[in-house]
Length: 138
Image 1 (spheres, rainbow, N blue to C red):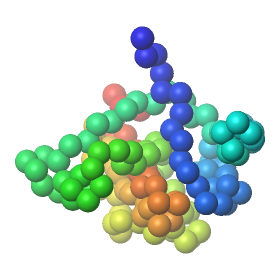
Image 2: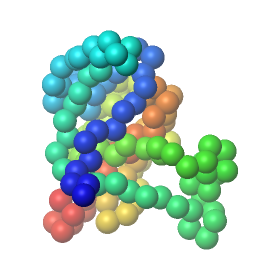
Image 3: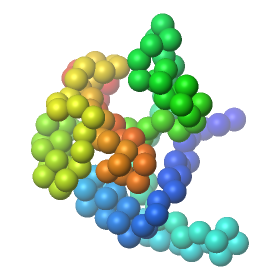
Image 4: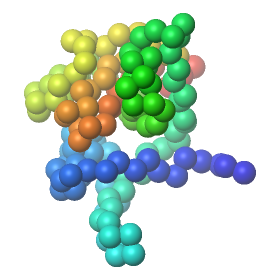
């Protein structure tokens, strides 16, 4: 029986830069590095409290997910980080040079304000920030 999401692995060209991003820019807790000689990899871990898997599919065969599936097929689409002040986080990240796919957050699933960081700003990974707008989803 599957009981939790253990981790999401992201291949990065510059480990130190990526560690800085997740530690300083996104404010996640850093649990250190480990070299795994048998896999010829260096790893860094950032535990994140309870999470969920979101399956995304194009509504009526339209929209950005339709284009994504046509171009790349199925696979990891994005990571989403919950924010308690999305407007402040967007301003802070823009000041650090992050590019976003829109100018401001919009309403997304579960009555959340959402915005996406351009993959070019995060080693090719699309990052979503969200902030629940009601107590039910906080």
